[in-house]
Image 1 (spheres, one colour):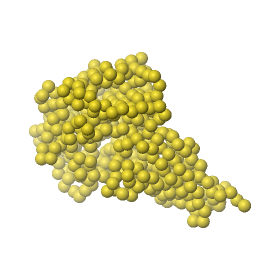
Image 2: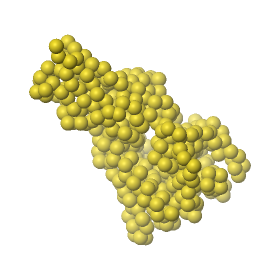
Image 3: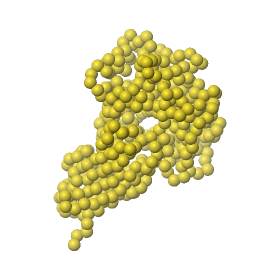
Image 4: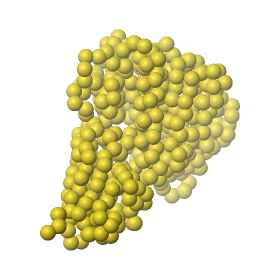
Length: 432
């Protein structure tokens, strides 16, 4: 009697950034095998399915074998994971805002026999600790979540900031801690102790946060990297340019080279062009102020999902406004890594990053640019579902098109993650 079919996942349980080997054995030669993956993430159901033709020995190796139909169309060890789609868009939270492990159930069937296995993705490595940060500094409430690696330290520090949805990204902070970095997921707005909206945000908040972190967290060799995504990427470049002595390195994901208004993150009634950044109580110029060519209707005139890049491109045509709002990245002498997405639907992050790159290279400053080819605005860590291309904005509720395709987004997530870890390792090593 033949052995029953089986699915082998190796390793079954590991950090989310670890690729798994998934093998399926025991089906008849050349059988059509339907493989399904399902999980619950942040309260919503996610699912993928692909059909394979088994080999002459009845086996499948997902890193080698291409589906003949289904959720994805190329050999990929983790294709079942990154091609998962959300089954309940009314409840979706993405990316995950909690560090709960993700349990993915896998089933393989040829219609007569079946096999099952489970793959568990973790965010918290053994020994990583967490504490909430709520501190009064400079008359402001410093708010965030701190994740610290196992071991006595000292550890280099990364301060990571979210974009126009506000809040914090605890899972990403936990992953930085798993790879040897203290990480303070720093809240800018829309979080406990912080303003609800992005309007009138003083740069002094970030100065106080940097000084507090240096004094209280005692990073190894004084290494403090500033990082963020989207508006958080804009913030990282802006803060490093104004307080260069407090920042050791910058990792800016899908950033902007210019300052913007509130766009989707402003208080009701203030409009998309309301002021964000201030210093010493004075507003800093942004791209949309007195802009002769800016046209929001370039993004919102068509049916949703809206591709905001069209509006941002319209505003760049006023070169005087662009130069007034440009972040003086040449003022920061340390290393910068830019991560962009070439099919970014929110704003043109690859063109934006090239502007930063050329400006800094003209001054002989260390700058690196990793392009996620064909990917959209949502650049995350590896092996997260990459299919959620259009979703309502968390603040404005507008249905926005982030760009990219699932396969390109998945490749961008993996490639950029490894490139960032390499950059941080070299930068922190150089600080020793």
